Image (cartoon, rainbow, N blue to C red; front, side, top):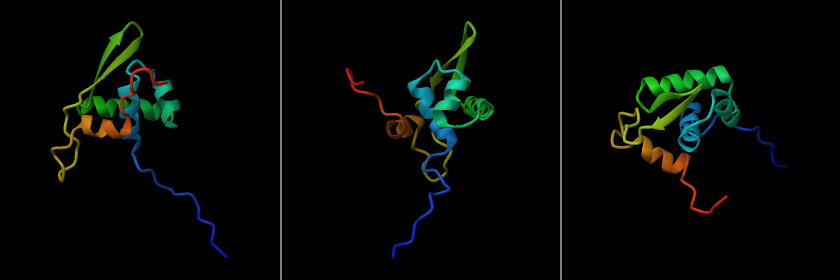
Length: 103
């Protein structure tokens, strides 16, 4: 008889990578929208956005009452073993661009 496996307790991508991917595809999202999309709390989303901004992975600017985000694609990831891998490289996997006309 085969044993039933419990669901994994880990995620393949961190919440930081997921938030970055969401922002890349939805640059006008609110913290609430980011949180709902990534399944985290709004407070956690705000913390992660702050982390990404502080490290130079994204830039925020105000437009009325909203933030508009820009992802800095050329920023190297924070890994000493692969300094040549950039945010843009990661986003080709996490948030690939949709083809024109695709839903």
